[in-house]
Length: 261
Image (cartoon, rainbow, N blue to C red; front, side):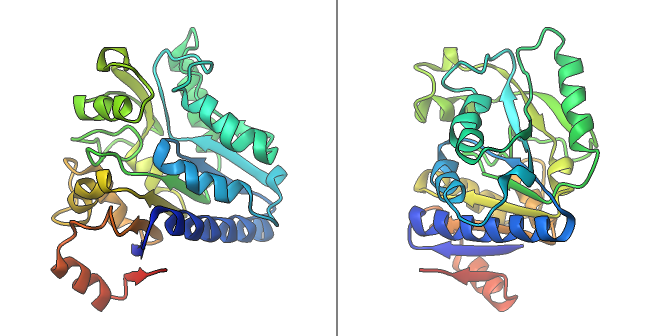
């Protein structure tokens, strides 16, 4: 795992998009296509904006999946992750091969199984993820299931996660936030050849510390990213502000931290 630290969220987003674009181009050059997993949430917006404006990507050769969606939510709802990705990625790039979770399908089990079947039919080249305020990755709230090999899970959302959605302005009150979601499992995320984690902002500082320090454990779901040999975590000065000096020195000694502009 490599930790890249930037002065602010814009520098972080630009650098993450540059790395992502390079990896997408390489996958297309090597195999004729690139299979990606897309993340949503407000922390991803600036990164997605830079990525979708990048030149030199043949988006027709990109195949896209997404990390998670609320159970029962129509894609017309402002908080729907399908809607966000359609507006911020699919319509901007012209990606034609995308497979999103129909969380309001009459037969949810079959819908989830079908997307999982497509997802696991070949290797994922790059997974783009964030880290939630409670340390979750996708919607795997603590304690996360690190054992299951199921590609997608139906999970219960904890209060911290649901309050984050209110704080980001997607819902007026916590009572409006769904209590369940479909989430890509931690092991499935780890199957990706490369993981790019975009984690800006002060409100993520506790989560970054939780996941970077101590043991890799279900109580800190995103800590599992440290087990992946090709993960880059992009943080800014704010989101990395609570990392212990000892942790920074250790990472620098191991050559696993870089400081950007």
